[in-house]
Length: 283
Image 1 (cartoon, rainbow, N blue to C red):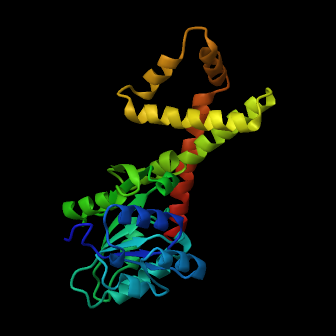
Image 2 (cartoon, rainbow, N blue to C red):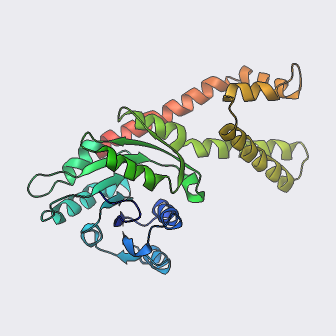
Image 3 (cartoon, rainbow, N blue to C red):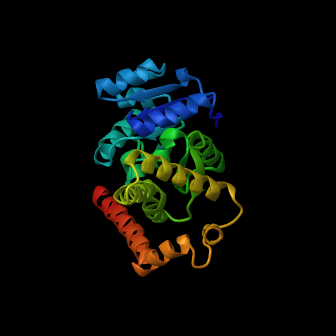
């Protein structure tokens, strides 16, 4: 198994997440000549080609000699893409590691769809990244098929570390749905919180531009404290909350409005929807 820097890496799909991973890989020393992207849309393909990586419109060409194939397409087209790749690998003695970031597509589906003519299946890893990967601050959940070796997992770890500050391997595949509800959809929860903070402060008279700068920096600073502090989130919250002070008054409002239950319901709804989509797309 080659190292990440020596691996030939194919991307099937060249959208934002693929572009983010490519940028992370090249910043880690992976040669652009070792990266090829299959992308049907000319605009995306031209942008990628301008960065120095190889591009094509033919999935089989991209995956033909790759050590790692990253499935970065919309879930609705994953089946046809995998079948095309599997059919093209019939002559290969060793198959590539397949890393799928196509939301909801199960390992069993990916393995079945990508089988070669002689019945072999590629070693597959499912990954749920999130959009902060676009700025090198991603959080990813991962689950590997039983066939994936420890060396292959380390290779995937190295791949994901190019854009993710946290990669968590879950013990059961259905826990990836929970990862989706937590970190996959999670950035939108924080964006919504900041959106409402800005609106509230603006309604109370603060100019929107000032409210936005203060709210966004507060979110960034709090996030940095969470990452760098040895205290857990509940202790950090307590550290900011003086008895009967301003923060206490705000948190009492949250509690009175059922904030915990709202968060529970939101994460559960996203998790359930992820599972539902996976079941539909597997058919």
